[in-house]
Length: 445
Ligand code: GDP
Image (cartoon, rainbow, N blue to C red):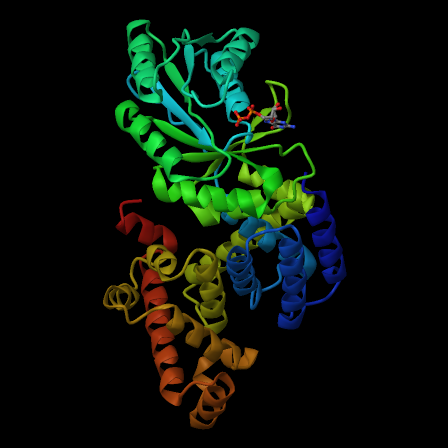
């Protein structure tokens, strides 16, 4: 279902493979291609922009891990950004309430609302062992209520008996009462659709929602309508408190656009996708699997994950050994900063080094922010390896050179050296106390 997008992206990443370092120009070139691929897949422009910015930021300046190529690493970054765009985690139906849980289905005519109602009822009955009642509130379309009754017959799910001449609100009341009295776990309300979003439809939905207080309000939209599907979802979101979206006709040659922009534009998770006319053509929406399908590179993603894990462990072990020996030079500080970045910033360091009061205080006062980190890194990078190994050789002249090279000031260089001295001093103290093990004891470990 995401074939063309998938093809384009793999062609882009193939070009990146086998190069030595993750250069900014390579990243930007790849991201330009990603941008075009997403736009061709009909993803909304603001969503594409946000996506590309985020992925570029994550990729530029990242160290290339040992044992993977830059291309592979970019695949992983784009993969993670895709998952985030799709909503990170699969969202299930939230039916954990005093029964009956009420699922209200809304959407335009022909979107697949009635079919999806029956699909979900079937799924709940078979997988969740739920007792489900379905009711059609569609009094506009002739035979809509009969259609649901037929689907109920096919899935062996009860439908509310049809009483001619009732309004949607009256049917909803009757359905609620029946569900309560007869001990149903779940009541599904299939509301009427319209050809376009109009105020009459919205008012009717609000009236039904008011008396039914649904546990879930699911919007059904047709993925084949691309950006229109997202626009429809946006206007519904503004009017009724949707809890999720079902994208139908994902079995067709729908471009990926609707699926990719939906979450970002509406803020609501895609809960299910419809994958066929038959009543078992319904799948839970898993952002991770979909991102995998789009990139078609699951092997690369897990390779990079493993490499990142190994390096983290190796670096942490090496650092722990040196700390145990009471050694801590600027190379160690640099590798510590790199680790920190991966672990999500300063709080990571503070929690690893409980003794570094200054860092904690700086964090509390807001003095140590990400900009501060970037400056520290820049200063460290413009030192030579020898200077990092033996900070005591950094005299005035070297300080001026380092400041120039890193776009900082001599004051910044001094601050870093002082911070390092304090940390190194602490390491020495720790050694006297019996190294990391002694420290752990102090903290009750
Ligand atoms: P409603 O007007 O929104 O209630 O739409 P219906 O449930 O009557 O569906 C309209 C048409 O779309 C029917 O022919 C369904 O079989 C078809 N349909 C619904 N969901 C899917 C789907 O996921 N895939 C495909 N291929 N067809 C679907």
